[in-house]
Image (cartoon, rainbow, N blue to C red):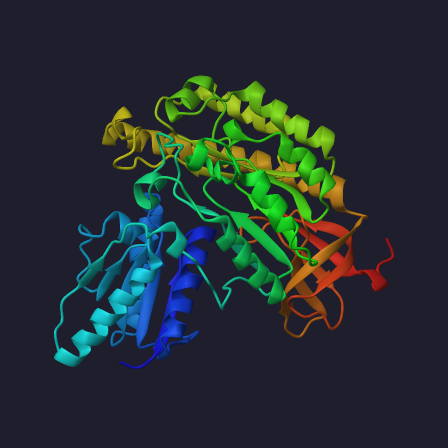
Length: 453
């Protein structure tokens, strides 16, 4: 078998880390990562299986790539493969590979190479369970996002078991990575010049709670901070019902931790939250937002809202819309409830009612997004225009004295960007730039020496 691999990654940042680990495993076996699918001998589609639209995208992407390179070997990996390993009707895939133990990719490749020698041709299916924690390092050589930024995954799975969520079904119960592994990986990232580490998990605050029912996240964050260097940290996803209030003071007193809080509330109608398995309400969540902002005026807060959950009424929608107007989040993601097998909420509605809920959810989603677009634009104008910030440059616009980057308030992939005017700006550089204006959800800036306020 030749040794060129193309990898198409779909889904969340956690999936991206998995993809980077798989590329490292293959590199250690002599494989070369290529950027064009047509040059590949092996194509890996790292799928998302969280909700139906993501599954459809995964399958459509698989066939699109198959059409472009029908002679390559294909591995369908990731969440979709883990969830439906033995029920995925996809004979066109040479292998189906789950994601709980990425080192098992070696077994898949061994079998594929053996098949090539013998001429055998059967589909390989490997849906591994978790390995021993001490063996579960996730070393990476190649980072798939832009230069200077990387994701650092501190745990797998989740113990919250929200009624609508299939993550525990796919990735299993919470399994926190050993602290020494996380610190070792962070050291490698810093040594390779990473300027921004985005810490990820299903819930950061749950780190270590399966050990002794106590969160060990602040301890971990303190140890990461003590590694030094000029790296900055951003915290992505903290469950609002378990938000550690001590974190606010930690961020306030540790300048290399961005004042950025990703707190997905999902909804605020009390009866819906209880059905979801959550304990908050509108007043509780608004109080948390206000507490963060009172202590940290520079704080940026992102949330997620889900519409169309079983039992949602127009009054419930009006309540969440009112909450969004009150809270004035800097960033907000919105999605429509997906009825997922093996979740607690699956039997709350039948298929016909679900279709009706999806139509109502889509309409309500559009209304929330329209309101949030105005809020985000206003907050960008009020908070950032006229001020100077460090910008991590990610991409040069060819033929122009313009580059695309991000300031502390902009997480990779999910928030807006900062377009910077300036010469000789290269990906991975951090430059000081003055913010001149707002364009939709993006900021316009100019490097400091050219900035006139």
